[in-house]
Structures are given as C-alpha cells and as structure tokens.
Amino acid sequence: MEFWQGFAAQGAEDGPFTDRFPAPMPDGSRLVLPLRDYGDVAVAGFIANQAAIPVARRIGGWMAEAARDLGADIVVGLPTLGQVFAPLVAEALGHANWVAPGWSRKRWYEESLSVPASSSTAPAERRLWLDPRLLLRLAGRRALLVDDVISTGSSALAGLALLERAGVRPLALLVAMAQGDRWRAGWPADLPVRAAFATPLFARVPGGWMPRPGTAPTDLCPLMHAKATA
Image (cartoon, rainbow, N blue to C red; front, side, top):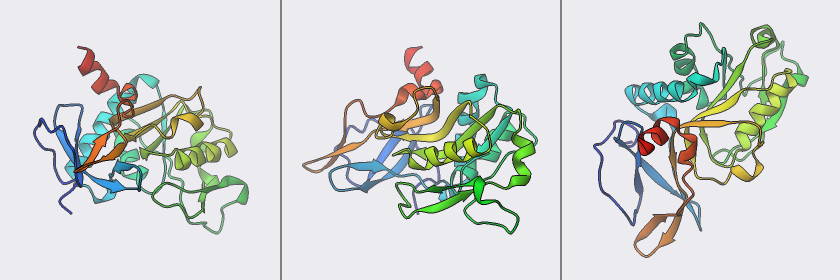
C-alpha cells in the first residue's frame, strides 16, 4: 500500500521500469503508480479509493481546472472510483450537488434507466442504474461525465449509454488518468475527453517495461499541455 499515498519530487527515471512508474503530474511532481502486467502490455494502475485523501483532493482540483471552460452545471460520477472525484469536481466548479449512478437496484428503480457495463479491471458484466428521482436534476442541464480512469473505454461508454436513456448527452468525459490510447478507436468523435494526467502503455523489454512511444494521450491534459508549450 505504498502507492498513491503522496507525490514525489520530479525525477529523471528513463526506464526500463520493473514494477512501478513515476507518472508526471501537472505541477511537475510525480505520482508513483504500480505497473500491471497484462501479458504483452503493461499499464500504470490507479485505485482512487485507496489513495490518500490529499492526493485525491489535489487530483480532483486539477480535473476541475481541466474542465472549467466547458461550462458544465451538473456532474455525473461513474461508480465506483469515479465517485471519489465527482463530488470534488462538482464542489470546485461551484455546484451544490451531483448525480451518482450505482451498481445496485433500489425498489423504485426502473429497468429502462439501466444498461449493462464492464471495465478493464472488472470484466464481469453487471448493470449500471440511475435513480429515476434524479431525472429532474439532469433535465436541461449541461452534464459532465466523470470517471477515475479511461483505459479501454468500456465503462465510460456504458455511462454515455445510461445518460442517453435519461435523454442527456454530456458535454465531455473528465477523468483523473487517461491510461494509454486503447480506447480511442471506439470513442465517439464528437465527445471531448479531458484528463488531469496521462500515462502510456508499456512494452516488455529486457529488464522490465518501456513506454510505447505516442501512447500517452497528454493532448487531453490541458494543464500539462499548457505547461509543455509555455
């Protein structure tokens, strides 16, 4: 559990990396992330509800700044880990509340406000539900969909499908980390994605793993992109 508990000073580590990767943050610090071995590829892992509260709070602040110009007036946080950041983002944007879909069906929920969902870390299919009592909170509002990580895109696409059931097309998807670029091919071209930070995919090499060139979608990170071009 040494991961995600604090930020490290900027380092000059070039790899190969064995079991961890110091991911660059918008302020120049690093967040050391564990590498997850998926066989022919590895990814940098981030479990938001295991992170230290100050770490989550700072990342949530960066997320809010990355999306501030979009003009959202309601935040929809995807379960489970996107809901670590959704209230932080909503508060930073000046909102009094937010919308929380969930995995469990309450007695008054309607089948029509649910969709099947899975993710890269939880591949077993389950259903994502929206409380029908929250429809009024969404009606006529400019919604921002919030999640922790986009990796394959499957959970975010389920969130889009659920909001479509509610008659809502969000302004954008906002995530803490864009984990590689595997999701891009299947993502709707008209829906922007914003991120606080981005990490690459990793290829196996002698001695560990090396980032695959061009797979870290830093173009989605306004705070980091602005710093790089300043």
